[in-house]
Length: 339
Image (cartoon, rainbow, N blue to C red; front, side, top):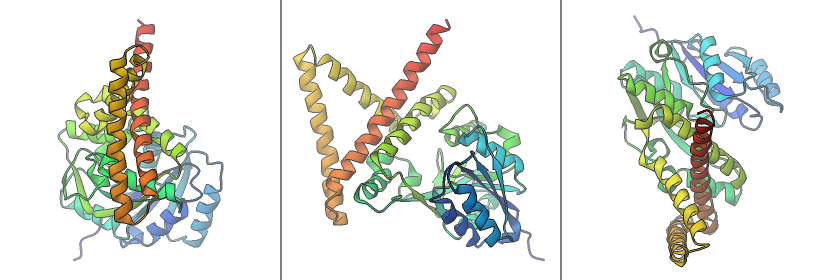
């Protein structure tokens, strides 16, 4: 007698994703996992573009896929996730992002890894691609998947299977929520990292399987990238207040570099030695990024990486670091003000 496959609910936080949501939904239709064993819940943060129209058109075209849309007036990612999980019918939860396109065997491989007991949370790797087809967007995508931008975040690199501290778009059994609690709705970013940290503190394991693959579309402009990484840095500090032991070296370097650079900038107004140190630090930093950009420009046969790649990396480092430091300062100010 054939073994009955577990039911799966795909949950998708969403807000103003008119440009990308259709690609994700079409990828779900192409999944090798039996359609009758899956359903989809989209938690929409009251989109103001044509996102809901696109979803409605998809539902009319594919009525055989159980898909429901719920409004999320809070408009935050963790509240959207919790809302979608509450409505989920599946035994297994698979989170995806409206900026992503999962491989056609994505659900099948997630379920297989969970069923084999590899981990309590299972995830795969990102194949980062540019959101639009221009030279800066391509440089940003390359920077987001490079060790200078990703550090040792294995899901952005080319890893081996193994236990890690976090994975993107993790999948897990729905009853895990009863064990470790919901996603923290006070964290507007880093909610998945905090959830994974809480799991590991409870004795659970996070498994990364490089055969579980999805395309992720990076930001397309430096302004969008700056906003994204400033937000990442700001909420990373708030997450570390809850789980200080989860700090990794890749997360400490940007704020440390930004702080040293800021201090030397101020001190250089009065001390020549500080000005020399500032100039030396800038020269070393530009040289490292420039050499990396040159190597990629030659490797990819794309001269624009010589400029675009260093710019993208610098924006990622400095805005992440500044967001992190600002979060620290703002937090201390609130504490001191309240006594």
